[in-house]
Length: 119
Figure (tube, rainbow, N blue to C red):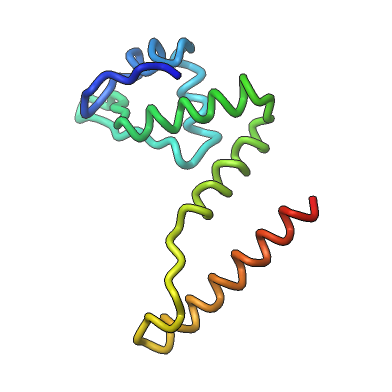
């Protein structure tokens, strides 16, 4: 895995060097992957945070190493984001709406797991 320097923000050229890609590839990925959203400076220059660089590394791995299509990589990233959401216990929430939402979330996660197992 590429070494990411210890900085707060990276210019697009720096990220391209870290990933060994052309800058236009990163700009294209920004249009295809909603999770890759660098902030823009007052001069409209892209500034990637460390998390953006890590996301770009993951996208590169999915596309170039694992052979996913753009749509497949997008689905993988969405599944990872959904799986990382914390599941709160319905019994530990106090408000009835929170309890109902926790039950719905738990049911959806169980359904997702069963669908993934049956593929």
